[in-house]
Image 1 (cartoon, rainbow, N blue to C red):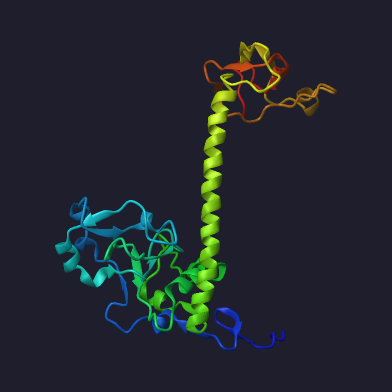
Image 2: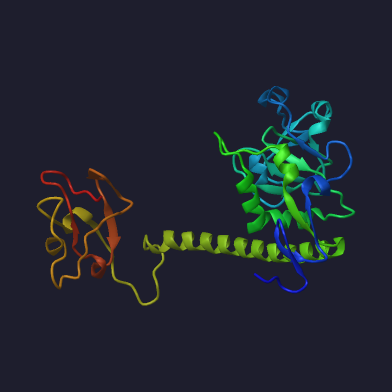
Length: 299
């Protein structure tokens, strides 16, 4: 297939001729411990955790693009003894085992450094040539996630290792272009975050409306008739067994359909009593398929 003019095929896909394709190893800083994992298991145990100190990055702190959430801490002395396993602002943190594909950036401002747990790895990039936010966006993309999944070791709990991390390939535009791309995508992420919060707020408002409307605490305009309290069992039509024909289940012209699933029922028996408040017009007969001699149930 003929390539687009001005583009070339690389290991990360089709990229402009002016871009490079590099490994994480080549993009990392030359300083010591630029690519490192968490401490050995016995070097960091739950007994080391404190309520204050140096935060520990665990899986639950990597649900977002930025390392965040509820942290456990270790003492500064403990963190100093594990200094090779520290992550600092601007570092990228990857999940090593478990929920592979999680990649987060260590934020600036809140803490000077963080300690990796045994299930994380981090990369310190050469920021003169590589913008961490751009690389983060790449690994959040479909191509980046595919590369992580494809290289994962699937034996037992899915996991990866430092050797695989070093071999990950990334596109590398000129640094100013990286920064511009990261800024543009960051603005989009912020917009999506605002929309998510708005949706969550609307969902809470709906739940409040459900409590008011379905209990009759608040009535809609134009409705004032009294509601009645009824037993659902008084409005059921029982069939002779659980293998009725379609014709028996759906009477011609009745407009009725068999009830297959309902949150108030479990296989074998309904909950002991179901009361419902409803306007009379909403109470129609419901056919339930039930085994002979057994109480009504819904499969």
